[in-house]
Length: 87
Image (cartoon, one colour):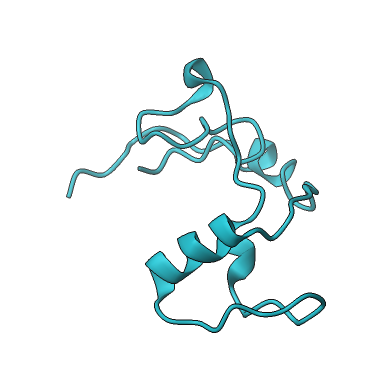
């Protein structure tokens, strides 16, 4: 595996400590379908029931514009995620 030899600015990376972001979403049948397709069988909860563990992974996905994507297709580092020089 190739090692990255870029120097790491630890003070810059420390400035990301404590950052947070809040998003809102609604749990819909499509969300449960995505969750079920990824994690397997689950019973669809009724109105007011507790959501299954890990459902938050399917909620409020980040949707950056195409020109704000990194080479892996996720949001480019340096916004919410620090610019850590790792693949």
